[in-house]
Length: 113
Length: 113
Image (cartoon, rainbow over all chains, first blue to last red; front, side, top):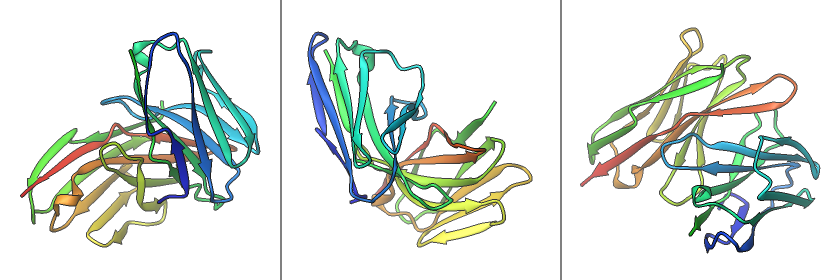
């Protein structure tokens, strides 16, 4: 248990569906991240939020829409996805120490049919 | 270009044997280097962090080394167990105003009985 909870753990959706991934952290951190993990590739940064404000968007297609209502919650809204978007989506929060450790959730395994 | 390279890509060893995983990086400015363990279908969990001034750090059967001059790190696993089967990811942090995390592609370790 890392203190970062992601739901759902598994999601299968068609290309015309709309779904959302949810992330909640109970660590009192102020920065939250979305990463995409595909096979044999490094983790790919998608979005960063600091104190609810988006501070980084790594040229992510608009079919991925993040939302951060407060420092503890982060969402990733999905619509009209493509099969190549199938991946493990990881949420992380950044610790407040200078070392800036990332604490990851268990991930949401997304399959787009 | 900031980059983290890990070798080997995959490794199979027998239970009880030792192994060493390698991480080479070209990241500037350097802040710290972490090794994460990621079980299949789970999120990464931090094993150890190395700062610029640290050469060796142990966490149970895991020992990490850092050579800041050659920009190399290694993770040595002693007396491997079946539960060590996982991907091991090297992550280098760069903090020049904002936090940047550069991820390696990981080494997939399989320990056989």
